[in-house]
Length: 240
Image (cartoon, rainbow, N blue to C red; front, side, top):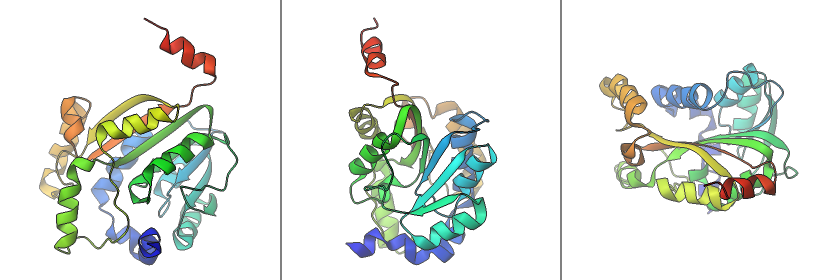
């Protein structure tokens, strides 16, 4: 079990090489251009599952006060070198922070690598301050069969947890923690490794990702916020 939990520490040196450049760029665009405002000045921000620090770097450049966390010490070191953020080694299902200490939590392609994604989502909700924002991307469980097939055929060099969450299931789990989902859509209508189709893929994301088709896409993106008070929740629920 521990080997799967710590798998990404074993490929830290090759992490950037193994990532697909189009997928990385697309996720950065979604998080910072489609789901967040351009100015993050002063926001206490957690990059949860920071990997090699691309999201930490972007957040810091927009003025956020960033803490970068990963379970791999080597990945944390790489992130610190790239983004010059405060870097912490830790487990996303048992985070070493006080409750309500972050204004913004960014988590891109991380919760599916937890033994229990639900516990990770609960920790995110615990750490968000009232009024705080979560921005998250993760694969859609509808496509887990293809990932498993590619792994079986040794087309993917990954051996960690891959507990994908379904589109509706993700929204339900987020809401069950008391967070309000604001935006939830799909992206990557087909495997992003299909280089000739990447320009078309971006077009389809833009025009159909927020339609019913979005629920069938390979990845999903979500923005949620934590109500400022119980009164806010009551007021919202009593609106006609």
